[in-house]
Image (cartoon, rainbow, N blue to C red; front, side, top):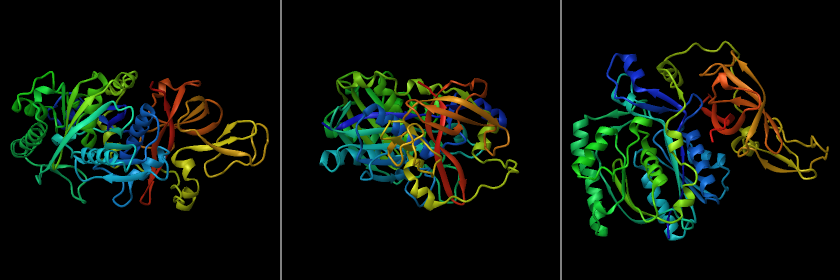
Length: 474
């Protein structure tokens, strides 16, 4: 039996109300909110969070990781490798980027299923993450949201068995972006619907039904992506689908999250699915991939913890000014502090485990975990003074408590003021780090924290990532 063994989700806690966008440009709002990646988040950091959530829920290991995105931070450097390193996967894990199409996530999913069926991999994680932007005053500025989802494909403890698939391609231009474009471009909406989206998805679903001798009425849930709620509803009407069957598009809650959209909808469907349910899952973009999934008895164990429902509401509303600053849409005053020194690539390579997966050390004599300044390996135990008796110890997955903190009004950041804290890890170890995703009025000594992989700064063409602490959300 091959299928989905786990699914993880990450949604940023920030929400931009579409009324706020409409007021900015004296235009009309399409209602609802969209999820917005924070000032220190991007495609990679969201992918890491979703991957870690998937691994935590599914357990075990992965010998393959594919990242699907249209907004990779580098044009020449593999983003999947960054995600795998932060997730602390084995060096033997096969990594790959799938890009240039909104259908990249389902393309990667199909190949992962085939790899597990063929025996060339035992388990593969497919992570989809996007942080797309629409130009100011345009419809896409209100439509596009940010988010990530990850599914693990394997053959043990399967929660949704794949029973079949069908794919077609279509060289149809509806949404596109060239190397010189910062914002997504779009063709006229009626042309997109009538000549591209609707006939392409209909053709894929019809082909799947014919191939496996099924009808749409045989499915408990039908999950398919769309550019917005109007397009999503239009396809349901055209295909005469039962309203109860159709999985909502999450448009009003988070917006269109690109390559992650279909997987996020699938996560919501699986959160309430019952054993024996049959799910039709469809991904669109330059063609269409359609899958048949049958939910297994393992779903009850998986549903013990919410997958996406607890993340949809968001927690922190932002203004259009914050959004424009975070996305570098306006020129903000430069910091008067000295410029950061250039990154040392050899230094980062030597300390790659400490930087990517937040490794410290644990004393072999007394068992005391300790994390020194990054770039410096401890030699003497702070507890028993044993010398050079250490083994690697991971801190990224440990909870922590805020020991003390300071609010820095001068530190250069896109979201001032900066909050820096001294945190104590459960089980031992102390670290000075930046806090993120926190309400300044609620920051207090003793608050519970967890670690999160974030973007620190961009310098001389290099994206510098490291770990920050954020309030525990569970």
